[in-house]
Image (tube, rainbow, N blue to C red; front, top):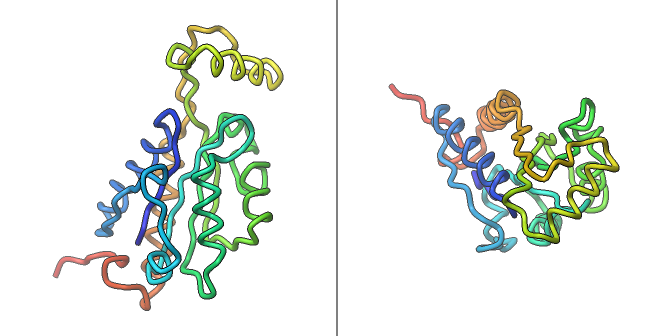
Length: 191
């Protein structure tokens, strides 16, 4: 099992870490890897059995390192199972937190002809005080257009942690259903 994330402000990393912790409770080892630091090659992805990507959106697009990761995955002749999670503030709205309802995730899957076993969108965190001048104003403008908070002192974590846990549980179930996965991707069951 391989677990990757692309994050600008840390929320996708936090979500990936939570998924790794939940998988560990199922006996599945997965260390979150920052795609800004290390991009896997096709040869590294192919034998994984199951690959998870937690990919942040910024200004209406998945981060460049997330796109690079997806392009690499799409090159595989026999890709492993894929679980994708898009992290964006639009997912705070009802119906925008699914593979079908998230425009960003839907476009990513279609554009790269992916067939994820699991796909969802998680709402991220709005943290105006942490943003630089440019980011703060662009994000405030986007929030104004989408009916979100614009007060520059606003800090709101929209992430539904129960949904993150359910996604991780779904990954564990997919792993358990695949006896052909390498031992490191299957749950360890104490004797």
